[in-house]
Amino acid sequence: MNATKEELIRFLEENVLIPAETNPKADVKIKRKINLTRMRLNEQVSAEKVHQYFWSAMATDNGIDSYKKISSIGAPTFEDVRDEFKKLCGDK
Image 1: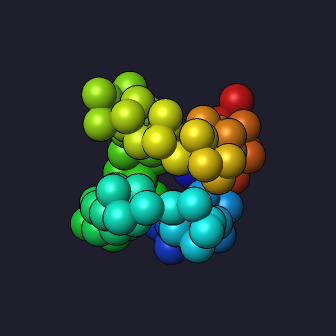
Image 2: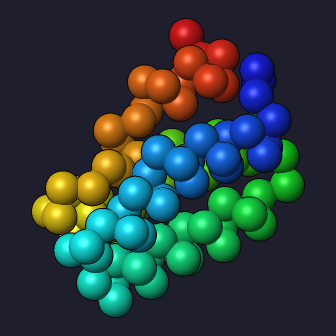
């Protein structure tokens, strides 16, 4: 793992969570999903756990629903930043 837990969370905050949350089209449901994601990310105990959460979140029903809602307003999603996230983590 090339990045720390804090660096990974900061990357996701700056590139996904904050842009989606501050998007003028973000409704209460989207903002609630973002806050839950933020809480779950901060509960992770290590960079490795943030990494695991990132990849598993996209495969869950909730993650798919979040993707649909957030992408429908034109905001960035985890899927949009996965290549950059991989590089940050040092994944091949």
